[in-house]
Image (tube, rainbow, N blue to C red; front, side, top):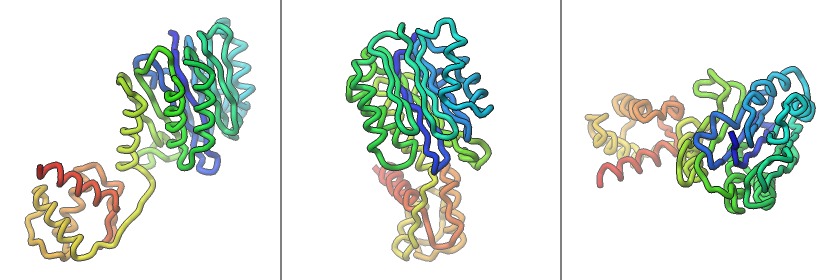
Length: 290
């Protein structure tokens, strides 16, 4: 399969996170290109993709080989190596990439500190250069930086055949829901006219429901009255709008968290609420009252 695409593999050693972001004029690129394992590394395999590079590469990285050593072994063993394109970042942040001579133009890559950008059938070299510059200049969590990189790549022309699918995959030890898996962020847009924008929209929802950032406020009487009124309209509360954070109000508020899949933002401390939950409640209430 010819995966005309652009991708970035990267890590944040301080946060102990590894990630891959990719966009392609290809249906459901997410199950094909990105491969990742927490504390081991990440791999992007594309352009007539040899998907065995994913599992094999992670196994080699797990054995302690560097990104460059793993890349060399994968490429040397592949008779169709000149059709392949690969990017790898290992557990120490070392990055390596390969673009075969038979990849459809424009094809190429750039290796930077703790990341590598690569792409084929692109509008030109400015796509990869734009991706690299965006990743280096963007601040914030690792997941946000590859997203910025995809946006920059698309703004520079992207895949010259167009857009169709995108994926963002970030791993971190016990970073998944409830701490049971390492899938910190695992999002896919399989078929969309603007897949990068849709991927970012879903990412913001993922951060609302499962993101680590927490900002709470102390509820005042006016806030409690507002919450009681909203819970009353949501049919989760049947008490008085008293401004008192009594047990029925707390129970109704906790039920709201659970019903809306916001349980990870529930504040056990009486009198406090996650500000994103309050914003979510207000927006939901406004929408339902129209």
